[in-house]
Length: 438
Image (cartoon, rainbow, N blue to C red; front, side, top):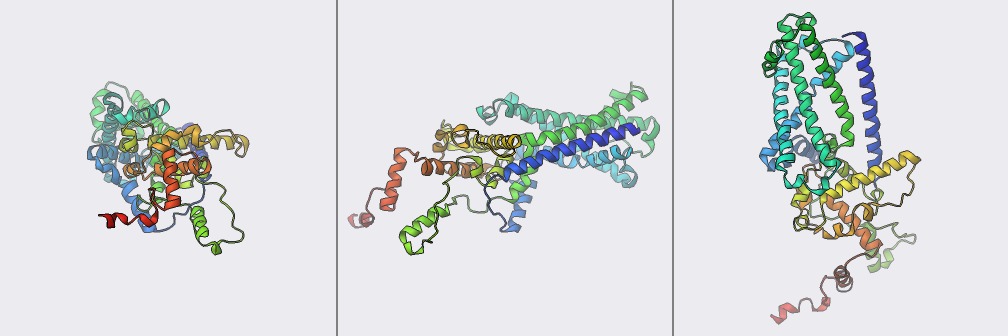
C-alpha cells in the first residue's frame, strides 16, 4: 500500500477512535448522574446472566425463527468483524492479507466461515426489513417509533447489508486477481472462497487495473463504513450491541414481583410505632420518588441507554393492549431522551442549569403512569433485562408523595391502609367476623 494511503488510514482510524471514546465517555457521565446503587452481590450469578442473556440471547429464543435470524446478525457482527483486525493491521503496516501467511490453510477455512455468516447476515437483515416495512408488524408501526427511531432501524439494517456485500465483492476481486497472477495478490494464495467465487463471472470482463481499483474501493468502503458505524452506534438504539453485556451483568437478581421500599418511609413508620428508636438528628428525606432523571438510579439510566426499542415490552403490556396510553418502550425512550438533553445542558454550561423541564410531566404523562398495573410483563419480556417498571414506580411515588396527585379511588385506599391496616374500610377488630358469621 502506498505510504500516503497508510498515513490517511492511520489518521482516519485515530479520529474514529477519538470520536467514539469521547461519545462513550459522555454516555458514561450521563449514566452516573443517577443515584448510586450497589450491584456487587452474587458475581457468579451475574456472569451467568452475561453468558445466557447477552451472549446466548436466551430470551430471544422464545420465538425460535426470529431468534435464529437475530443470531445470524449478531454472530455476523461479532465474528466477521474479527476479520476487521486483519484489515486494520493491513492498513497500518501497508500489507495485504497479513494473517494468510502464518495461518496457512486455516485462513481459507476462516474466511469461508466469515462468508457464510456474511450471506446469513444479508438474508436476516433483508427479512427484518420486510417485517418492518412490508409486513409491518404491529410493534414496528407504533407511534412510539414515529420519526427518527423508525428510520434508525432501517438505516442500520441497510448498512449491514452493504458492508457484507462489500466484504464479498472485495474477496471476489482478490481471488480473481490471484487467478490472473497479478502482483502482490499471489504472495499469499488463498484459493477461491465459498460464496464470493460466484461473483467471478461478473468480473471477468474487467481489466486487472480496474479489478485492483474495485478491490481497493471495497476495502476502503468496508473499513471506513465500519468505523462510521462504530461512531453512529452510540447515537442509535443499536448501542445495545455494547451495553447488553453490562446490562446483563447488573441484572436485578430479586424476584420480579419484588418492589423496592423506601428506607425513609420504613423508618418513619418504625419511629411512629417505637419513638424511642428515632435518632435525635433524624432528618426528613430530601424527596420521595423521582421527578427527573437525576432522581433515578444509575441502573435505571443504563437501562434507558440499553433499550433496543424492539417493542416486546409494549406488545406484552395489558394496559397498552386495552388502548391505554402507557407504552413501556416509550418510557425507556423518553428517559433516554431526557438524560441526553440533561447531558447536552451540562456540556453547554459546564454544569446542569435548570431548564424548566422534568422527566415527569414534560416527557412522561400522569395518564401513562396511572395506567400501569405493575404486572411485570414488560420486565419478563425484555431480552436484555430492562425494567421500565422501576422507572414508572419511582415517578408514581413522586406524583403521590410529593405532589399529592392521586385519583380519589387511590386516596380512599391509602386512607384505609393508614387507618385500618388494609385496603378495605373495615375495622381490624372486625376483620375475622366473616368466619363466625358463616
